[in-house]
Image (cartoon, rainbow, N blue to C red; front, top):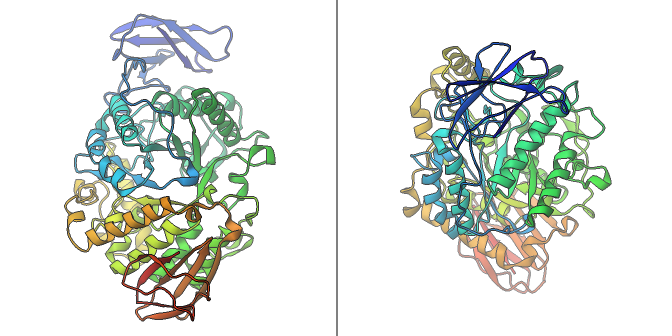
Length: 581
């Protein structure tokens, strides 16, 4: 087989394959590339030595059996026998996503263990599982955002074959799979890319150090590296979509940006494979151009997370006002109404957290609602809290039901964070398993310093390196069968079924969403076609005037409630939600 590596600065390159050495030759047609032909089968271990240096793992390694620091292994993707014919599932316009972390979805923390629990999601009614990053990282347990070897799969989860079995199991249940990928930084531990070539550049700096090289000399090959990795997940593992981590941190000044190039390549692959593929961005820019079509000078990504909706909903539910919640907390129901109808709260307005004007308004007449994801919790918004506490740690079941009502009947593609559907009591904390003692110490102390600035005592912050931190974050699968968890779970199932059955709840017309609210009384109501939705976040009953519109049927209600009478008045119990139609 052909082994190849891009190492433009090397004067000599060798392939080390199962204890043998093979000289590599310069590729006369590709500048900086080295190649060697050698017999090798599935699982053969290999690496590259540059200028007589140590043996390094392949940057395009498909498998790292011994972790990021060990040798690479040959993977033949044609060996796997797929059990489920798959031409693609539900498009984003009708989707309900479920964010899942392989290492804590079950105590075992493997693909196979997670696959065994996918029946729960099919019964829940979600359409796609959004899996947090699975590229190799140091140790056994971690969030996955410090991965390296962007073509490989974390071995403790089950490696390449484990991921394929997981995807196959999901598809057998009719569930699509979205994979979270990280292009904005790698490592730092186990990251050998700088020894091969200019994968990073000091032209730009990010919170993680030097930026990935997307626009400096050598960036053509770096972009090809990232593009190839992204397409491999979609092609070789039959993944249905990718979630792109923090695209605002991709420093790129080229006329044709990497994200445009990626979206075009994914659309092309979609046509070749004959199944729908999509890209979902995480972006902090509040810029509608992220999801605008390329022909309209947008980036062409298919959707993006909407943190503004989350922040407005979170402040309305909790009353928190620290950090980036400050602007939303001034009038939380007003902020929630704005994000339900205009997508971004900061759309050219002043952001006190940033100390500047931020964002740009969305053209609601031209932008479909399914270009945005709405949610009340995510791995970021839970795990980046000091104690990793979920909403269920402090809110009543009624308020959790209100949050579910707004997410699952709102205009955006709903996304749930694993366990929220039964009000899981387990936290989801920040945990690592760094094998480098100095890096482990730096992470531990850095996290404690971060929260000390907000008044937390160091001893109260969970140690990321303590195995008990990860163990505490694993879902407790005994909870869904007991109260109040079972009632919350039934409410989620009811709302998801209603969203699937009622076309008005999947209507992409943002301009048609009409919202009314009372900041003091803490209620909010909105109309989506013939559907009316109302939530009461207060501890007192409220009366809401919905007009004499003939809405005589309660489609779903958290607490018993009568439909409005001829006076058009809805009398809603405390901390409850209702859907009328």
